[in-house]
Image 1 (cartoon, rainbow over the protein chains, first blue to last red):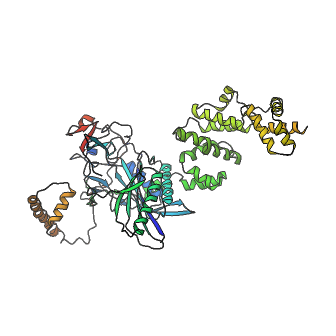
Image 2 (image 1 turned 90 degrees about the horizontal axis):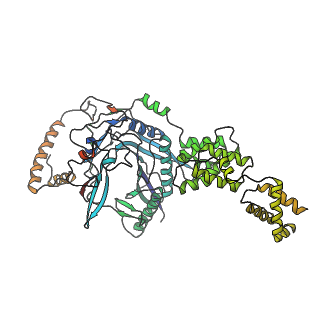
Image 3 (image 1 turned 45 degrees about the horizontal axis):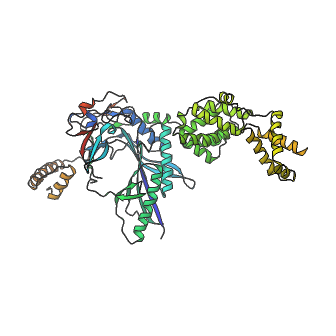
Length: 482
Length: 95
């Protein structure tokens, strides 16, 4: 029997506010020593009064609008009760039955564009960080409260995804929307963008949902893809082996490449939600919502369409480029002066996704914090266009520019890399190459055209890539014809 | 409404309260009385009263996104019976 996979994703994204969700402690805890961004509100001390961070509400509403959600006239917060050492109060302030938005959608690219429903976007607070230790064979835990209270936005999607690859596409699109909005870093490895998945399988064509399994602990896009592929296959094997699937929570174990059951009494899903009495309801006035809508930046889909129309980029290239706002901005910065000729557009794209990407990856650098500015890249391209620099030399110059932040013209002068186009100079090298490659010369004269490419290569080699290949080619033909 | 012994046990578990059998029985009676009082309230006809999550007539209490200094670390840890590496040390959290 063939089965269909049904996946629904839940994303938690930390919002880029300066202060926490309900108090004025700094939300920037990444490099802070443990328990130094903490106050009585984060600690859940008796008698404290949390107050809503207006910026977090604004970011969440902007996100909801970007995800085509409906924003109600008012929203409120609720307490989600569960005892766990990462919750200082014994409850998490979240939103239950009056979330700040519902019913949206985004488009993903999977066998053509397809809509995926967004159930809701709501606000809550992050929990404390637990560190697990062992002493004398006995396990214990340490609690760092810095993360507790950082604004967290939960985005719940409908179970509209049908494969691990679609799940990956959804996450990539979601992250890029959040980055375009500037509301979250979207960094999955650092935990500011997290994903839990609900996954079940069912006989193809069936509309029923079998027992769904919640999968947690996936810390990268790749992990999500692998975990969901593993889980779909595991469920199929259980069914085909005559077994029964149970509704449960399973954790992805990256090193072993498996999901394991997390059945435990610690997870009594009995949250006893009730309205948070310390916080007032929030009115979301139409005027304010419309003002936020008017302030939304250009989003990935719109930018991609514009890149196709304005720069003549193929759809695939435009998708790749606009997947990262930083890369898209860099690309445009390189083309902002003067007309974007097709040749220049292609050159900028090729550099960004060629040597530049390679070096950025190798040095773990983001494109917008690279020493190599768009202006400097443009200067390099201008040198190449003027014929002052050969292709291989340009690569070498580029690499040095990347590492030092130097300018192309200075590097060319310092290393004597300027392209040799002078016929006399090239002619000398061509003569030497002809003299020492008798076989290739004979081949060419016998009509074997590829031998010429070999000879041009020898000229390039003899000049460490600095010769203008076009000049070398012409001179070789001229001399071999004579 | 009378609560069952099992319900009281479940509530105690959710609240992480360890209770003796004798206490569970005493709480069962006391909690049942509280619920009975709410049953009286439920007799009031509220058909024309809009639901509310709040008893005070306030709305939109928010603050600007500004940072103030947190408490000194020594004060944060002042009540912690066990500490290590600047953290609160607690019993192992079972996953």
